[in-house]
Length: 355
Ligand SMILES: Cc1cc2nc3c(=O)[nH]c(=O)nc-3n(C[C@H](O)[C@H](O)[C@H](O)COP(=O)(O)O)c2cc1C
Image (cartoon, rainbow, N blue to C red; front, side, top):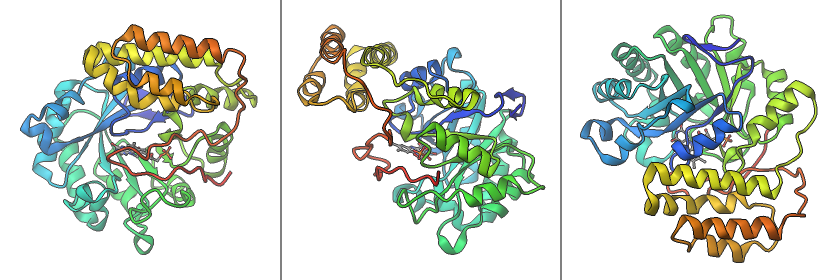
């Protein structure tokens, strides 16, 4: 049984990655319904929380049905991070995660996100300040190191454990790699197999098939995997992996009817969280991912992103379900979503986990 503090997560938990503009409550709701064991919020700026910025505050929203859920914060200074931890505690998540992995310049140049990988003593001080500021279990998500010459994750893991973190997620790339090339899981395995390490170690990077999750578990002994892009428009990935781990067999891919059903659920959650106008607008970025694999879908997609009422969207979705009712989805990978439009993580679409 994998545990973070007192939170029991089962044998090999599947974590939904924190993703800016993606891992909001509506998306988390559909991932939870489809097997995610632990989910994280989008990252929240510690400075933004302290300034009471509306966008940062909204990201604190969590709902009981999604527990266990973690809120992730980032920042480069101890005091604001400790203050932000206290604000997060009031929102009552199950745990608090520190982002030491974000590679984008506007974050790293302030010594936050992966920027702190250049200054390990500061990373340790900052983590300790957060651990001391809150009663919540604190977890960390980070990368292998800053660049190829400084892959210091083994030292980092020990030192962060020593100041009290309760779990560590490692993305198998350096900051310099951003999201290019393949994730290197060998160092993640080394951290997990270090006898000094007794907190759960979760692996992250390029998992997009049940086979890859199984292989990561067998090869590197990690306690669970965190999944990001493969879940975008495809929340079924969690149950597919679980089923495969338990039975060695694949679940059939979701039918178009199931895809439309979950897309509608996502839309309803979006509207009930953000209201009709914003809820419909924010949902638009998800349709292409839900409809991936359907031939000649462009016309329908164009209609979906111009609908302004829930019933209009649902009508188009129903028309799609009808038109493609006999479509057989192949279990072809990669499933990784195209996130190139994201403002925060300009990403490569790839799926290069060493199977
Ligand atoms: C659109 C997008 C937004 C992301 N936002 C965050 C974030 O807020 N915090 C974070 O720690 N990582 C963030 N990431 C990185 C993911 O959590 C994850 O580490 C990365 O996608 C690699 O995992 P994957 O190969 O399963 O997608 C983001 C990634 C994407 C694609």
